[in-house]
Image 1: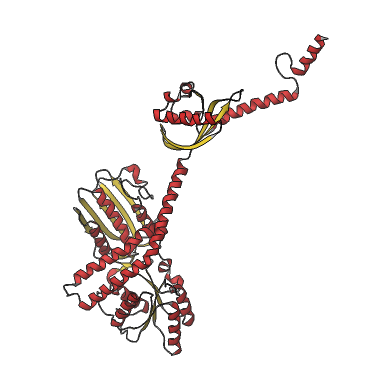
Image 2: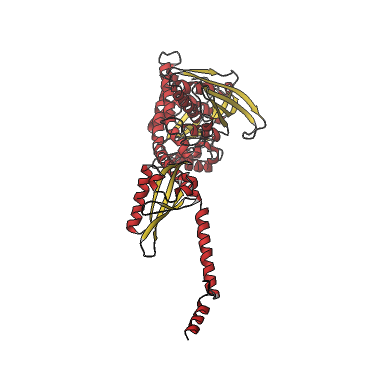
Length: 531
């Protein structure tokens, strides 16, 4: 009987060599082998360090990515304690996080930054308990995922959100700030016109004018990069703009500016505030690169471009801006226009990013070259307008055309600005009707039409507190008179309507603050009057 029982047991259990004979048992063992192979392959081929250490901190598992990142062969790491492999501070940190898992018996996740032979990494590490057959935590396993790029992206987004917040703040005060400057600048230019160029005070007032323009550019520094801001283009003398900007930024230094501009240089089809910001940023960078003094060389020439990969065919102004500083290493040049990249110990890293952004918005191009010990140079292409000598208005010169009888509607919610514009335009011979908001503008406009007369031009401010602004007003006025020409004015230097004024029904744009000469030039151009 005993022999029969043993025989039956052998038939049910195994073939006598320890191998399962029933099909389901063979299948189960095969599945376990496949699962073990899968786990081994998964651990080995996961592109992240996978590891395990026992209670004494000895390594019992290390995958090939761990070996690559740590820089120690696994054959040397297995069986060695943490402090035998890692620097003391790192080993202590690993022991501390391991002990937390040993004590709690639960997984623990955390972020850590450390140096490896491959560089500096920011890792998201997940450690988990490994239990023995008695249910005790005998080891701690872990996997570390490289989140360096994700972390940098988070920091970039945080910086961008901060920049946008500052941009919104700057945008909020830009209107009031520029309106105040418009009052100052307008009255200064009007005073200069009244006293004449021969007055000993004219030069001082001219200095005030330039200071007002630079003050208007302060808000643009933030607005241009944080919010964009399409350029409000006008034909501009680049030599005058460059000289004023560079010389002002070098006040108090021993750096010598050297300019080389041909007499027939074309005017730039540019936004003078934004391009002024470009040269201010380049000058500040060069100044910081030459603390002991040096030279900044700026030159320009007319260049017709008929075939280029990155530039549309047309007439351009090629500008060269070079300093005699220490230069920039070749491996850093490729990042020079990236936001937040800087070679200086202090600074936002936005200066050259703003330069690149502004030039791109002008449909231009900027490149950089540098050699250690020989300085750094920037080469720029900007679209050209007609020769400046054909566009420039002589200072304080009255228009040649008879403007008597030309009726202008001026809308602004700032009493001081209205007063300046009314006085200035009246002195030039125009008939001026000032209004404070769009509702009043439409009412007055309708009354004039009903009387059999008409306004020949309108100058409308975009933003009116508590009333209808320029965008809405021009739509109403054009319904009453479809041929009515109007100029849009705004203290928001990044306001889209300034750059795209034609899309909103305007003939031209004025960015506050502006001088009486700016005002006069724009009016005459819109009305088609000769100077």
